[in-house]
Image (tube, rainbow, N blue to C red; front, side):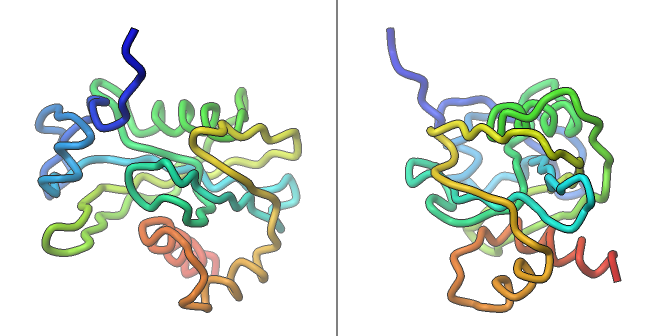
Length: 175
């Protein structure tokens, strides 16, 4: 039996306006800089004062080894962004059965030859256990919002650029 190859995983392809237009292999989407969708969940503590920040596995196809505060991934064929968010929260952090609250969507374009993605943001509150999927996450823990802001202000802190765009928008909306 052949091992699962992330580059061969099928994902939904979008147009620049945010409409689903087809399906392609993840590797092709990244190589050809095709628009695609990604859903992420900002996991907050029950009191809302902390967020769960994790480090991506060095084996990830993109943004390997960087920090992130969004549990998420690409929208699969036939999936809604909310279905993706539920699936990814369960896969990456082992968190299931909690309500997700939609926040906003953001078109994110790294520029010529880079990633182009419609990012769908959700949040959830949780004080239970977090269990990492080792193939996706190497470490993680709860971080106060003030500390996250401070770390994000440091350009040397290795944080995913799409997650940075999302959390900066989230902070701006929080006031």
